[in-house]
Length: 290
Image (cartoon, rainbow, N blue to C red; front, side):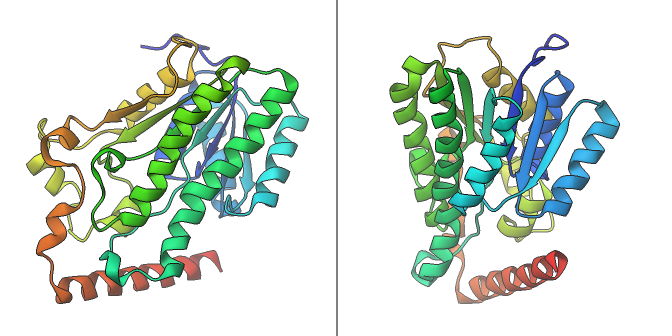
């Protein structure tokens, strides 16, 4: 549905672009002619993704190993990108989440989510936005949020609170920065199965089963649907669209609340098993990072 070369001359940064939703969006922007930069905490993974995307499609993909919780590292990355020409777009995709009873959350666990989702997203957005304003460049910011910002996120309180901050930022800066030709929008996707989601938010052999049972359309979402919506929002097809969060979940949030409220039936045994799974996965991730 998109013309060839739609993003010719565009330069887009995707945070958390090495895997999952971020990689898929980067892939679509690249296929439509954009120069793409991706970043993530695992530099080797981002390098591998960049090489794979370029081998498949050509074009330019630059990879950065950056923890967006570190404001100084964010500044250095954005300065390096702008040194070769300004960005035209930013996708705030990097995030973290896990399920837990809120009374069991440690302050460290809460901060781990808030630091990357709220603080990190702000650091990147401000670093890019202030350069757009200073240089007189228009720009577009797309952030990935969740439908829980509208109806709460039981058992994911840290994520729901932090993502709500991103939605507030989207509305606030759309109003504040609109006069500079900068617009901000967000997508709140329903379940699109990814490896990362399966690791931290699913305790079933079939991560999509609950969604298929409860979704009005009887299915999970697809990467292509996210790619299409992201491409439209980042294009120049409707520059008057700003400050909006678009839910893409087959109306599940409207029908069911679209969150983890069903886990209210869990007892201590289920939560202990979930915590053990999380700890084992964290150990494997640490080992993989060396």
